[in-house]
Length: 326
Ligand SMILES: Cc1cc2nc3c(=O)[nH]c(=O)nc-3n(C[C@H](O)[C@H](O)[C@H](O)COP(=O)(O)OP(=O)(O)OC[C@H]3O[C@@H](n4cnc5c(N)ncnc54)[C@H](O)[C@@H]3O)c2cc1C
Image (tube, rainbow, N blue to C red; front, side, top):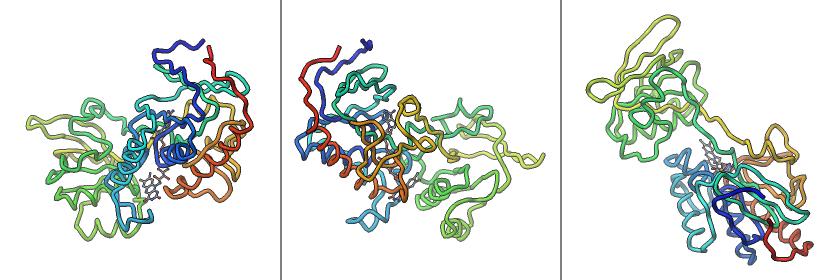
């Protein structure tokens, strides 16, 4: 028996892994079909929208001409709460074991849940921001150095250095400008963002230091962040109120790597009905792939609906006594 602190004796029809757009939509559809479903989420609900780019406007979600991603996620979370769908946050899945032909056991450090079927909606995994990896960075994390803008009010009017050259860095630099921050952009190579966003930065006369990378951070006497940037032996010292580091993500998909499900380059292979290679395990959203796959919110939602339909057909083929697995 797997030792656990929190053991849920009920056998769920379906356990959904991940409370991003895909997982939350799957839960809504499962409940509409009277299934006993629950969601296990490793962080806070909301997926990439809430945890990665909460202030970025989403323009391609029908029904809203423009909506900040975090707000769109909040509306989905609200719906989950209104429908009383069980959601366990801060519960990263570490293992999935097929206990018997018809029962899966899903476990993390502090819990163990049983289910007749599973929907894998774990997106990019439990992503962590990439660190620059220079002295002083970890000491100032949360105290001058941040990796996400969680509350824009904390940045308004501040003197900020944004480090990074992809879409996230440039979009956040533009967001900071809109909120009256004074911004400088630093990136070790060429910018890789949308051209019109780069042009907006240039039109706003944002200083852009290309070819430069930070070499150390420290807190200055007046509470600001003092840091050095280097380029080919040259060194410059800067002092800013806050530093935003946006140099990408380090995905953690360990539990999926252990699961013997067919994958292509860490992405779960599904067919047109969202079946994985393991009967009873379905997938949707950014976690899955198939020919023609597009990684967008709307595709994640459509795949979630398809996964639940397929799962319903699968459950009808099962005959399971309601007894606890031990
Ligand atoms: C910067 C950026 C901007 C984007 N802009 C747009 C846009 O404008 N429009 C658009 O349509 N799409 C956009 N996308 C893509 C969109 O965000 C994704 O397609 C969408 O989030 C996929 O949803 P999902 O639910 O599959 O995955 P995710 O949103 O990644 O959610 C997966 C959830 O699973 C959880 N999870 C992962 N591993 C575990 C585990 N082991 N245990 C428990 N929980 C786990 C995660 O914590 C997460 O909450 C953007 C993406 C990025 C990075």
